[in-house]
Picture 1 (cartoon, rainbow, N blue to C red):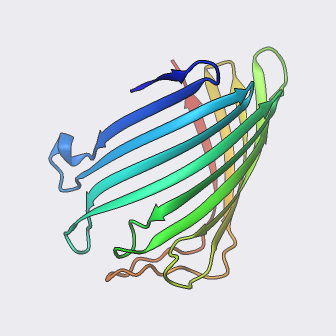
Picture 2 (spheres, helix red, strand yellow):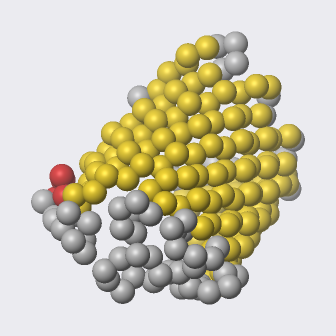
Picture 3 (cartoon, rainbow, N blue to C red):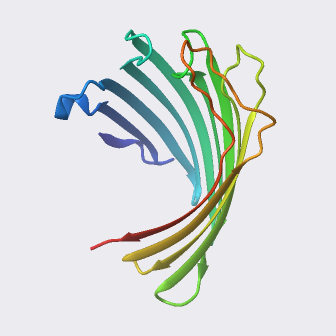
Length: 195
């Protein structure tokens, strides 16, 4: 559900409720998500937003139903072909024990190049820094990524994407199970077709 609160600044709200797949297919994975977003466009191309998420889920390791909350803010500026986006989030870490919180953010820079009437090329880069557990001093997780997408009209998109984890070490959340976030470096090639 969405709507406009104030047309002068183009203040809009978005509300959503989502059920996990267990609601549909009877699988044991069950969760509910309640999300909200409020955003304002201060001038053409500049949008500031805040959002919140409330999740209920059954923790796989303990079988206990947990509640986690995440709060975020973002700003996006588009000028001609250039897009700059900054996002940040703070809240409960669903991978850790109760009371363990995460803090992080990332920056995205992209530029859309119009090759002709039908073709557009968009290179983009992203840098992300996350402290996955503020209660444990495992250090920051740092990730860099880059992508180039080629769009043909609104029909076809081909993307080459690469990411690398340059974190100083791996992070072990405060769980009773062997759950570890480790360094990853990978390259993807993806194609999307709209019919």
